[in-house]
Image (cartoon, rainbow, N blue to C red; front, side):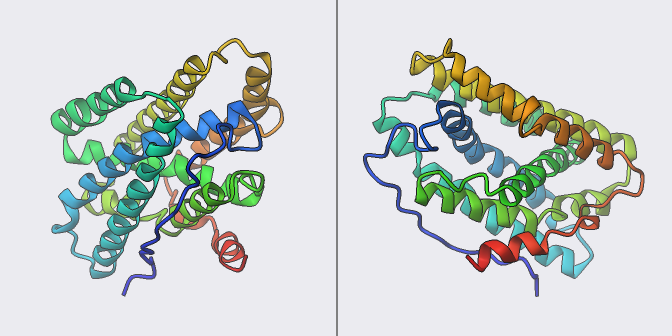
Length: 262
């Protein structure tokens, strides 16, 4: 049996919800609003790429882990999608953003590129989301967020750490092409950074906060000066470039257990 557990949760978000639900921070609120609307399709993209290969996996344990990965990611997509009603009730519109994201992931990547290429991009995305999950749990990043959203993001982070090696192993079971893995990492990172920041700018524009100095001060602190998340991304990418890299080399059980015990 797979050690990856599929938890079928049902988050109940306050309606109406406070507009800046992340401790009144416009930047943090809209950064993670952007993540929430992107997760729905990106998780489905990851699921489909694993589904395409699952029947060809010979290792029974990996096949079970892949099934559990699909179950977890489906729950992430579903629960984040529920929060869309709250965002729309606050007056936000993001249909054009979704159209753009879907064109890139579904009409270009999924439709025209090979299954192994899409798996490599998926590995790149998972490598970045694993880092984000690790950072969020280590620093208690969501401690001041609205409680139900804190719970959702931390639950999501725990499961990202639980299944961090699955897509990597699925790709390796089909090909160990090192250059393909690096290309997938690069493209996956670029896409996530682009759509995460594009969504944030979209929300800021609708809020008429695009020129708010405090927003961009917090942006600078998160990415470069205080949290230094961009620096962490570069170090994380450097690790990925090792020929002997594997996601399981870094232990995250203590983080997973710390959240479960709270």
